[in-house]
Amino acid sequence: MGMLIGASGWLKMLDRYRRKVDFFLEPIAKKINMEANYISYLSLIFAIISAIFIYFSFRYHYFLFFSSFSVLINGFLDAIDGKIARIRKKESKKGDFIDHAIDRFSDAFIIGGIAISQWCNKFIGIAAVIAVLLTSYMGTQAQAIGYKRVYGGLLGRADRLIILFISIIIQYFVLKIYSFYFIEWVMLYFIFAGIITIVQRYYSIIKWLEMG
Image (cartoon, rainbow, N blue to C red; front, side):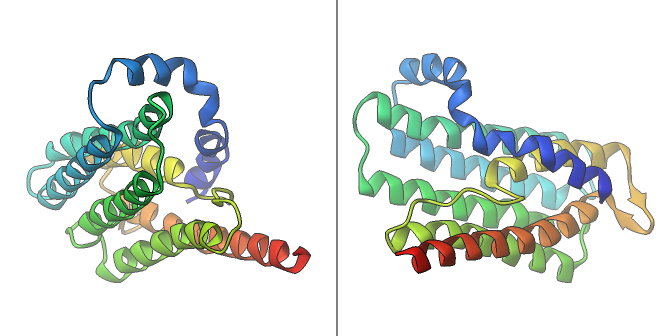
C-alpha cells in the first residue's frame, strides 16, 4: 500500500501536466485520419478487451500482459481524442459528452473486470468501482453546475491507468502479499485514495459555491 501511495505522488503529474507532452501527442494526432469520437469509441473497445483478459487471466496468467497492454492503449487513445478535436477545430458539447461518458464506461469495464475476477475479493472490487466512479462524478458534476471540470485530488484517471498498467504486470510475477493478491492491494488503494479525492473535490466545489 505504501509503495502505491508513493507512486501516486509522481504519477499525478500525468493529470496535472498533460499539456507538457503535447510535443509527443500533437504529431501523432495530426497523422491520425479518424474522427475524435471514433477514437473515443475505440478506447472503449480496448477497455472491454482488457476486462476480458483480466477476467480469464487467473487461469491463463499470460493474459495479464494482454490486459495491461490494452489498458495502456485505452489511456493513450483517451489522451489523443481530445487533441484531435482541438487540432481540427471540431470541439463540441457532443464530443465532450462522448469523451467523458466513454471514460466512465471504460473505468467500469476495466476495474469491474478485476472486481469479478478471481484475483480480487468481490466486496473490495465493488467498493473500488464505486470509489472510482464517485471520484469522476465529482469532477463532471462541478462542470455541470458551471464550475470548471475538476481533475485535482490524490487519484486522477491518468494515475489510475498507469497504476493499473504497471500493477497488472506485477501481478504476473508476484502472487500474494500478506494473503492478498497484488491487484487486491491496488483495489484497496483505489478505495483509500478515491475517498480522499472525493473529499478534496467536494470541498473544492463547495468553496467555489460559497465564494459565488
